[in-house]
Image 1 (tube, rainbow, N blue to C red):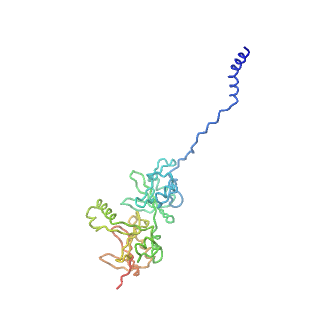
Image 2: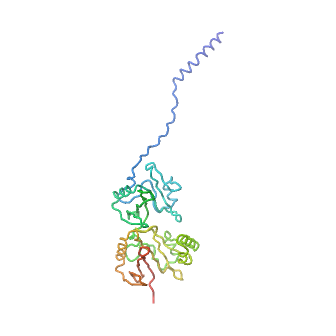
Image 3: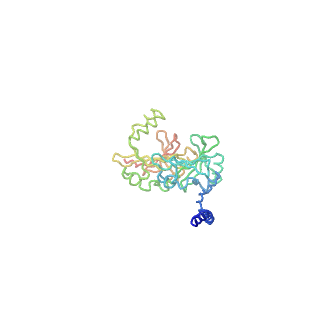
Length: 335
């Protein structure tokens, strides 16, 4: 009987003891919810910084001219389509464009209210230079030290501007000082073989097979008609040098090459554009005179040609169709 009473007492006391024991314990701390840092929304004016043209912050460590693989390494979260969105500028899409052939970053751009874009750029980088593109007005700012330029033009939306940053070389960087052309610094071009070009100019050599040339002609014919294709002649393999565009060039500066039967380079020529900014025509010609002195004027088939040197022979001629200066350098003729 005693044992039963004792057991009953213990049974009745146990809940009370457990309750008292529980009062002395604390609940384990719950892990704190991760608080994401609040990202400040910035004004579009902050996309225009410094006292010279600079890539806006949303493009991060990207640099014009880097390959797509290099860009992915520089910005790990770069989307596959190249479009960057950031909470700092929720209403703006920042776009990157990689060349299909070279995979290099050729331009970055975004759209903004036109009045604001021009105002912000002018406040930071000074008055623009006026130009045109397909008869549409374009305003340009240049940063020659960093080979960076920006253009502001109308977008497809009324009142909105297309703000585009591209890489370029100033004309002075392309041609340099002294008689020799700056882009020939790795080796004078005249007399080189294709193998020499591969060895001396690997970064700038551009080759096109006969098959690729035929495809290019087909593409042109689709736009310009079969008559244009007939004028281009038989498609053949070619080797050129391809440098960045100058101030008023669109995509690149091509140096075209001509060879002897023995496979040595005997002639090359390139163009320097001034069509978007006609005032540059005289400015560029003044650079030629500063570099090579006063030219001798001759006339061939009704066209005026300026001869700046006889050895090598350096001729400059105005291309009145494309609105550029054509520069030709060749081995002098021997009697």
